[in-house]
Length: 318
Ligand SMILES: Nc1nc2c(c(=O)[nH]1)N[C@H]1C(S)=C(S)[C@@H](COP(=O)(O)O)O[C@H]1N2
Ligand SMILES: [Mo]
Image (cartoon, rainbow, N blue to C red; front, side, top):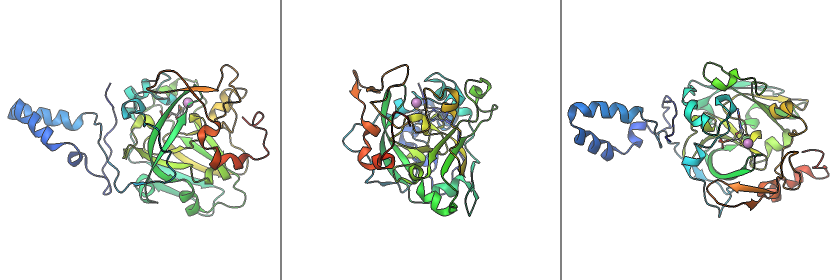
């Protein structure tokens, strides 16, 4: 299966698609097909769902990356997805998310902040130095991946809008456009998809505003053009294609807790000791591996995040 994505407008800090494609390969194909066919080949080549289309430049490695684990191949990360706005099947997003127009795009940062602001996606890309953050990702369904995300700590954005003393939580809202997202017509979730974090969770350096993966802009199926990634929580906390970030006083509604409060709580920290009502969370299948491995407390990030939950009963606050 190929990777489909829309053709974004290329801002200055992004290497152009033509430059990034392998020119020699392109010339070789054109020559073999002859001049007339070459034009068709060129069109095909340029409109082809590119594997390495839009590279992000100046991405530095982060010391906060998980090391010593094999990366999940890009092909798996882009064809085995959960993105219900594009359907509930694992391969639905890779087949239909090319319909998502990721430019122009803006994110409204609002609510309990001194300096509310609507950020254009190009502003967000330039807001702070881009870092590669390799994180383990654990889906509540029992599978996991290791993904080299590109982004920066979400706290970088928070600093710029200056939350008021009333800001206790952050709510993230995903796009909900039935024209672009066929899954929205199915009332399976209460759209738009919303997720939330407590302020200290949002400010934790591991929480990132994510703009890419594998050195490129995010493929649509992975939440282009901007998502959040919170590696110690089940995957559903990491909302995709974010259009609004709201700072609020009360714990916000979250899509999965609304869908089934008994099965999904607000915190949703990866916890092998607290089973989902319908299945165990003790083990996981790493995509690409046979057999299962043990799921780690806080997805292996306990040294860094356990203190956020000191004194809390994690069976109650699941
Ligand atoms: N808007 C939105 N965000 C979403 C989802 C979704 O359906 N819609 N699925 C979540 C779930 S369940 C998981 S496991 C991750 C999957 O991210 P990935 O496909 O990039 O691996 O995205 C999360 N973010
Ligand atoms: Mo998930």
